[in-house]
Length: 249
Image (tube, rainbow, N blue to C red; front, side, top):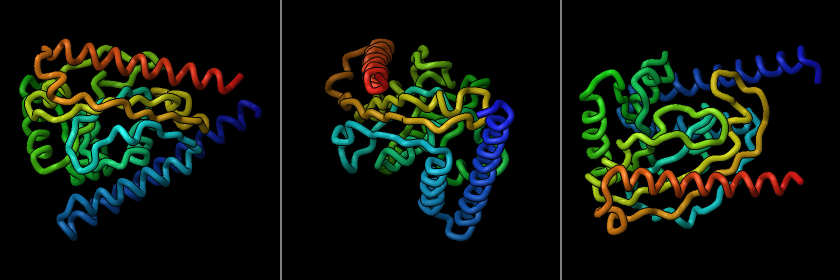
């Protein structure tokens, strides 16, 4: 494919993603205003994610779903390398979760408001009390039986390396005394690299690792907890990369 045709295709796909996101954002906002029910907004989020996955050509495999304990709230932590991570996770995981995101994300026109009415939690990184407020809101949702998803790297990383972890997810798990569920994603960075539009269809792998229960982590410091989980996830990501490399041979 010529460079010009590739650019046109990238522009077209990216434009469709924007329009689809705008449509479902408005639908979620209007549905919430009519019903005052965040679960209605959640249905729009699921439809948005599945349509986006189909449109962008993500073909994903999900492994380890048997590691998910049904009907139990948990803190979910996953690596983050692409804007495609969220629709992939919404489509792949049979979990009703709320996400902690930077305040700037929830300030985006339409999408930010749709995320807000869904019950996602904004954290202000420039406010010292921002983390404490996000933790308090997370605990409230957990007490209602909802799970919380956090990208512990705090931002999208470049490539397939896992960055250093912030400690908020691990503090929340310890405070709530609930399982922490590590999940690793491989392949989304190829499809939607950081700072670029939709550039390619991609084969994506999602792997749910074993839950870490309170009985395992309560005697660990938050740093020990964070470091151990990062090591587990880095190993899982490396295994996925090796499997993908072998499959391409």
